[in-house]
Length: 189
Image (cartoon, rainbow, N blue to C red; front, side, top):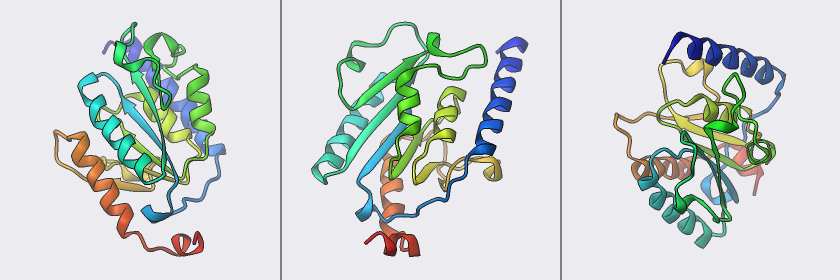
């Protein structure tokens, strides 16, 4: 990445920090049993992982949970398998502003949807996806643990060794959500 790109991303992160400072949210730690809506933020640069997300969507639909997936594809043209799917929307590199922040109505809609759970599948730490995860109004945000947990937008962080497989990561997310037994989970009954 060249120096101009780094400066633009740093400016974008600064803008994101200002927006995040205005947000007042209290995490809602719900047990998996109480979760009805799930938003997933996904790095769509690996089309072969889409089948795993499709199986996850089917599994959650069988349990009467609604899943919405927002993907970021770094290319100019979306792969055919990403089009015409009701529960999936994807934005591309040309839908970013000068500071690499998404300027797409689907992203705005996703951010403003109050999902019970947000699952971040952004293992490469792409800034446009971090932007969406950080500003999301989801009740509980789950993501990979990193070396700066104090600045993370996530309420629950999963630690896994690299390389992280999406299917194993989703298994861990579900496992930890099954064992949550907090006061907010009890109040949701």
